[in-house]
Image (tube, rainbow, N blue to C red; front, top):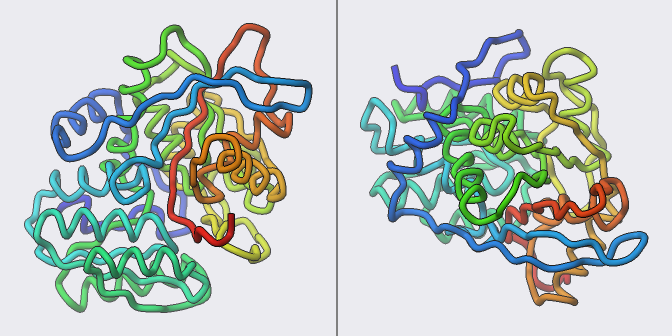
Length: 325
């Protein structure tokens, strides 16, 4: 049975996910050769609470589909044991966009089940890549349950939006690129979300570089999991606007974060919004709110690098409403 057919993390019962290793990431990189962009790194300084802070910006928002998630989606579909010609996924945003794009590239049909709160911009992007979009439930968990049922009804393949080994391994390619692009072993700051990105970086880099997870303060999914000893649902208020994050960290991400003692830093929504506006004002760079979360940690002082250290900041997504800037 393919890992595409088995939803990981859909149950609240404790699970022991298959570990994602650096070898898995290297395999994913070979598999995706010529299919994804090696996104550039921009060395600069940004405003911090006490003056300019040197940083290296990983421009992952330039990836196909405007999201790092396309790496994992392509890796999952290309590495699947089966050959399903129809893929179903539940997603509030970039996961659905990535799977829709990957499915279109491989000639497969795609259905995305989205919660009622899904941002219109991201739904429109799913449509643009040819996906069928169905609304169900008020949150990701409800949409995911419907996606599992729908996949069975249609005899289609099923992908989880962020908690599958192939997705994590695909995201980890970013870590391999950073080893080639940035000298030394500076820390890497990345948005937590459901955990796919930080897990991939952890799998790729291990203890070679410190990975710091940055999460919106209203959805501290990694902090809550580390405190509870396992993934737990976070009772988060529905945010106004597009900053819609998963309310439970993925099992794979928790396993990697716990083994590597990965810290989690909360950042206020206002700081994330300010960081996004700063990127546009200073660099004419457009990112979505979650894409600016890691930079917000530096600019707000939630993360303060040691003297002489230039942290890497991953700008991970660009799917946003332009009029909001």
